[in-house]
Image (cartoon, rainbow, N blue to C red; front, side, top):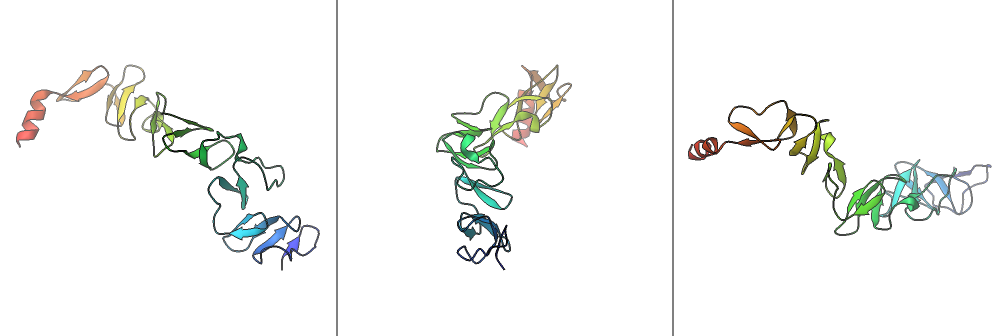
Length: 177
């Protein structure tokens, strides 16, 4: 049975609403549904995120439950988020970095599907990178090789400004094989 927090039935709300705080606001839903105003839906619409089983609005808090903060603290170009401080998608041509949308990822991060991700996710010593598999420079006296940072370049490679690069003769031999 649907119930209000003061034992008043949620009769005017969606049949899947299991608890409410008024005749217009559902607080929880049955099964795997999430609350969205007076309704229960299978997933939160674009521009909202799920918090405690309730779809919370991106720019304004139309369902203010227990003073939960909505996504309105995010950049206006943010099109999706997973919390009030983390944008997970931006308008066309922009990438997400924390709560903002920017033109390109700054040094020390790379574009990971529209979200700037720290190069230190490759290895803690990676200072700059251009993907999840290529570290371009390392901190300290380490050199970059693929997604790792090592003390010195392996045989067949040389240190090219902090990046292990194949020697030309090894490239030709591999190509001729």
